Length: 360
Ligand SMILES: [Zn+2]
Ligand SMILES: [Zn+2]
Image 1 (cartoon, rainbow, N blue to C red):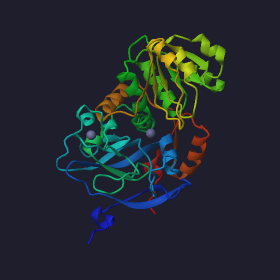
Image 2 (spheres, rainbow, N blue to C red):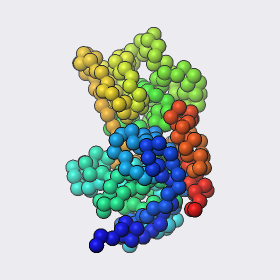
Image 3 (tube, rainbow, N blue to C red):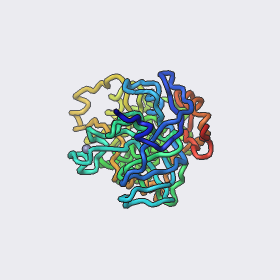
Image 4 (cartoon, protein in one colour):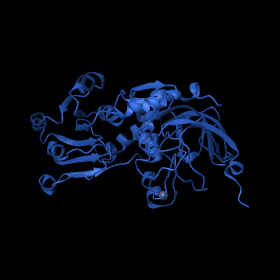
């Protein structure tokens, strides 16, 4: 007779979960596995709210199974380690981002690109290798193989640093991989939300001259003063777009609504690179000539591997990079989701899990 997940996974956990496509989050008691020999168990202190969480709880990508406890920008403090854990001890500050598993043996895993492993296990809402489902960080604690746990730098704030685990690595990785991390480069950032505002900070820390592209003229002040971007362009304004034609080495495009990319390709220098990290539902239109005449490249990038995510956290700590956050109690989460849908947040909500999640 098959044992139930409850007996197989004896550790009670408590969090917030969506139960249907309304996406409404409410308290849920569930089970997590006992601490395995390579596992790290930690109490969740803070968890960022990523736009993916919103897509996922409403099943907008079509593979959500309910109930789902979202959250993949998780920071906490270690409460238990398995007998073969080498990197962590009780009391350490740690983080978990978008991944809690991968095959560890494919060619992507071999070169620390677990984010492209075909067998990767997302932090929430998918089957894990043992057949159980993963639950994210809107919960009292987490358990993960130590390979997928990040060491939290001593001087990096826990609350404002949490969003780096998704928004930070999503923007840091393409800047590094596509060689857009050299001082003096001219870098564009399209869209000023959770991802975009961190992209500006990362690019500035690499020594770039940064131009923000936004459809919202009202974001000029916050771009130039708040985020210390060098230039601001209203992307709907053809004249302004023409004024930057042929000037940029690279562009990080964070926009997930359908938008024209021809004007962005036009803003690139020869050999320039446009990297998509937002994911519009409909295909984007690219004219071959806009690439050929200038040997330009359109690429994409998804989060980062564990080694690079650690490197990014250490880089952020060294350069004082955090997200701009609004810290909220967990019972505010449904209101936060409504506001996120309207882009009514500067720029990331972070749930104060430890101080607001109370077991029933
Ligand atoms: Zn995310
Ligand atoms: Zn793999």
